[in-house]
Length: 326
Ligand code: GLV
Image 1 (cartoon, rainbow, N blue to C red):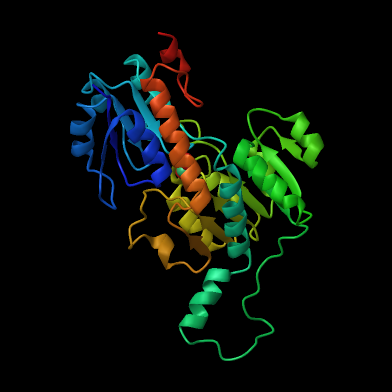
Image 2 (image 1 turned 45 degrees about the vertical axis):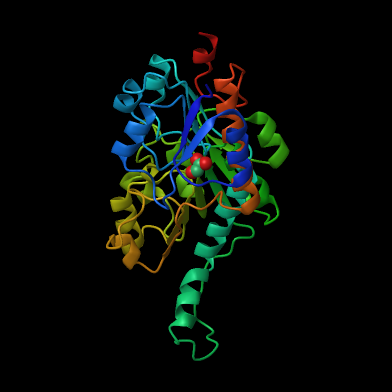
């Protein structure tokens, strides 16, 4: 009997092919995620789950899944999965680090540039038929070259953004619990032990931390009030790292100049969310890793991880490797 796998969304073919070689695969066909109750029922009858960031894999789901050996997330982040509950049940949790680093860093930089130079606002203006003439004072934004960029979280993606900033001759500061002297020397970065000391120095702040109880609302009213009134906040990590109510007030009352978000709290952002009434924010629908090539690499890696666990091999990326030794 081949092991059974449930895949929660249609993913690029090369990923599915790997699963089909070794397992009996069921793919949820919808454009939207399976409802939680459906996912729970599917989990109860399979050996492997192939999930997305939109799927909540919590303790009750894991406890009702006696055959389950692996949850393979097609994402680098895995805050949608209760890893402790999985570990308690001996279920491996896998993710896809590395393959999406550059694509996500490209997008973070794009969002930074779009917010600084009012690209999306300008496009809306043109489409609304309001472009009457060239204006010496129209659509003034903020320079990127030579500005000071603060990276919050110097992991793979944060480093990728710091590398891109070199081309714009930016000064790059970073805050992270772990200091990286090697990268400081390579890229000329300046380390800050306290976020509160970094924020007032930055023209741009870009967030690259995982979501955890420690990073929930890491950027709230107190932090936003420390930023320059000309500063721009970029978030391509997870929505709940920023307090959206505080961000709304900050953008509306001019504590900071603008923001670019690829992630929101909640997700999707409701159409009547007050943030959507503001011109000085660019919001995209969690697409930072969405290039053709990278989504294929993610689909393949997630499939390889899942199959490895089911075949009793060591997967490339497992966030709770202690379960593999049991
Ligand atoms: C996407 O958000 C990811 O974590 O890969």
